[in-house]
Length: 83
Image (cartoon, rainbow, N blue to C red; front, side, top):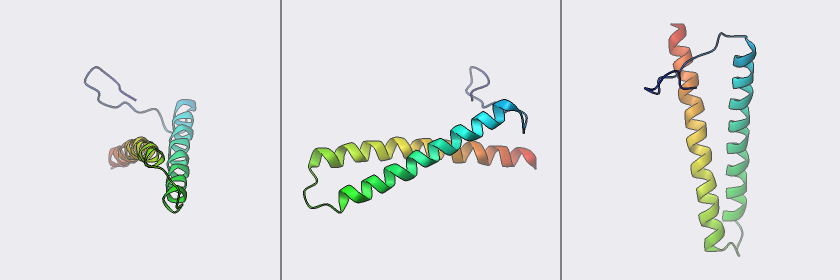
């Protein structure tokens, strides 16, 4: 989560309530990304998938990918902070 107006992230104490809540939210983001990927694969393999449906699933994949990258970057920064 942003800690100040510069957008620098702030971190919660490990094991605290806020940290557990954040980890749960991260797992939910990754779960949605997995589901979106499965839906996209299912649509792509259907013969009668419309152009509109493909555009929609691409939009969902873009959102999910961005969110998953945010989670990965945040987790990486937390690991770097432990060094």
